[in-house]
Length: 253
Picture 1 (cartoon, rainbow, N blue to C red):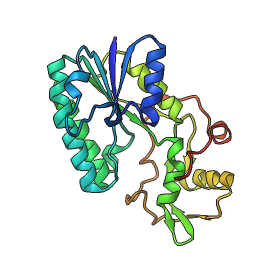
Picture 2: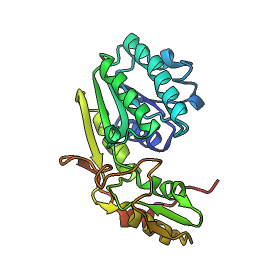
Picture 3: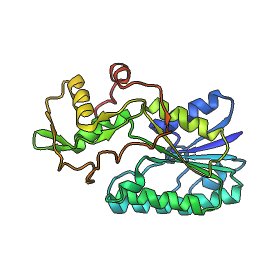
Picture 4: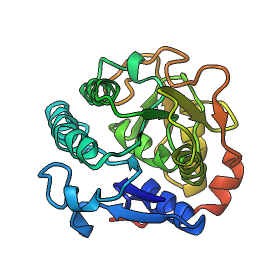
């Protein structure tokens, strides 16, 4: 089966491509650096020839409200007609648990627009809502620095290792379209301020983490459970302690 993975050279995409190829499928990693650009349409029609399943993992280059909205609107406007013309039989998109609860953020409003376009396209689909990746915890810390402190709310988070995200997405790609949303999450719950503090302590980062009920998460005021999946979510296997000790942080830029 031919499967096209949009964003197939990224963190999750490269792992999904590897898993599907190992399972014997004809997998194309589609990204600007492989000649496929959903924003301009370049290479899209050619990439989708013979495609049965499309996995969309592309993400906005910025959390800026307008940049994110422009990205998801333009990508959908190019991608959906190209998929219909090619006869794609299953569209999978990776989104975020709690998107509908995080609409204070322009980025999540843009994600909601993306999801609406998928639902209204007429293409059989599955939207995968994932909790925050463990690989993003250091970025969350950086986003929350105020002066010499990292200030975060005490909300719950159930983070998921990137390998488990990729495994779940690959499994969905080989399944029938759900015609709706499925949720995936890590196996353990933590308070956001506490798990970030553990990562920074492991890294020997000197920034103290301060619990602040007024602190924002990427500009959003979180309720206690805004980032948590509903009961019945598909859970990954990777425990946080194992991940922290065994998955090296990305190289510093």
